[in-house]
Amino acid sequence: MIRIRDLLVRVGSFELPVKNLDVSDNDWVVITGRSGSGKTVFLETIAGFFTPESGSIILDGADITSLPPEKRGISIVFQYYSLFPHMTARENIGYGLKLRNNPEIHTIVSDYARMLGIDSLLDRSPAQLSGGEKQRVAIARALVVNPKLLLLDEPASALDHETRRSLWNDLCSLHDRGDLTIIHVTHDRNEAEVLGNRRIIIDGGKFVE
Amino acid sequence: MNRPDLFTSVCIFAGSLPVLLIILGLLVLTGLQVADPETFIDAILDPSVIDSILLTFTAAACSTLILFAIGTPLAYLLSRQKFPLKSVVEGLIDLPLVIPHTVAGIIVYLLCMRQGLLGLPGSLVGIRFEETIAGIIIAMLFVSVPYYVNTVREGFSRVPVRLEQVARSLGATPGRAFVQISLPLTTRHILTGGLMAWGRGVSEFAAVVMIAYHPMIISTLIYQRFNTGGLYAATAVAFVMVVFSLLLFVFIRILGGRLLSEVR
Image 1 (tube, rainbow over the protein chains, first blue to last red):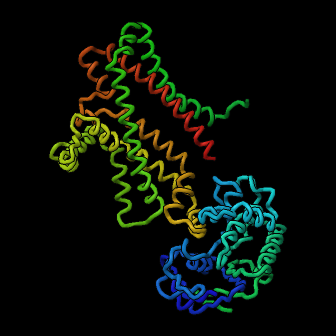
Image 2: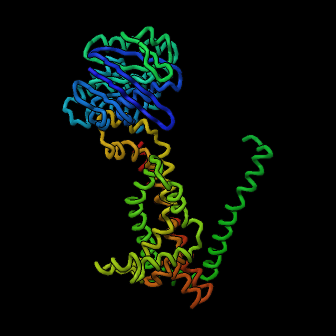
Image 3: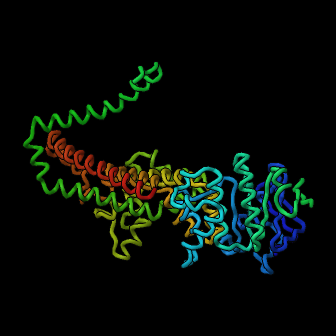
């Protein structure tokens, strides 16, 4: 469970206050709002890329507000995939497991790849993948490390209609398997209505549920 | 092939002039050797010429290796961080590009002479810069810093910060994210910057000669031959240097190409 209390994030002249937000285990919270409303800044603060001016972020009872990203156990998937271009799809997915010297790396990577329908693409480089395939690799890479929380930043926005629908289905299947808490930001109202079990709108720096 | 339009023709004409200038210079230099092969053969068999070329290449390689170690972190910081007086630091790095080489030589001498800011502590631990290869390396390093740092900074700027952020979220420390993500993706710029810095070091004369006339790097030797033996004695040594440099540059380009394809 993640608890956010009296958070104030300041990036340049932009300020984002978050009074209170609780996300229970296995929740899928979808946050919408206009461009520039602070959705991505909010996710990046939870991930640890920004340090808030004040307030606290508690994850599973531990205060992670000032922990570096690598110690938070939170994975993030960005809109434009952010795959490592010098690695194959297999190496991308296995990156976090390799950092942990996980001996089961081959099996785990194959399992997730099969789950997301990209098992035949594992030896390709990111340049040889379509947008939807890239995003599936990015999702698998984020999930194999078994994160306490998955952050999705406009994961389907760069995809065409068909691929977007297919990715939504995959995300729903992964969430339905259980043990996956998601905070998902999107500017797409349709996506916000279809996905998740809670919806929050950021409006004028305020969170409205 | 389609007939080039007017703009392309102007580009071809203008672009061919600097290439032609280099080719003409090389032809004149080669012509002199063909007209007087004995002087050329004497030069190529002269151990002091070969030693001088090896010294020049080695000293430039050492300064480039030092730049790999200290210039790469600087380039990374400049590409990633905002800090007070950043533009002053950037201006300082560019300074060796615009100051006359003799001025660079004076600065290096003032730093490295026996009572200098580097020379004094150096002499306490047994390192002398005046008339030594250490002085040559420092002078080459001083003039080649902007070539390396600016090229590598451009390389790091092309690596999206998001890639490092993803690596961090997956468990990589900042150092690991740098070594495993940013550094491999900057290989091309690091190799190009290294080659440019090395070439700049090899070509330096004024800055080196002020701190170390001896041991003679090749440009000092050519200058000395010109003063003592005249133009023909100097051109023979110069031609040997051109041939060596050309062979080495081609070799490095091929090696660099192979390294890059392996990285990809």
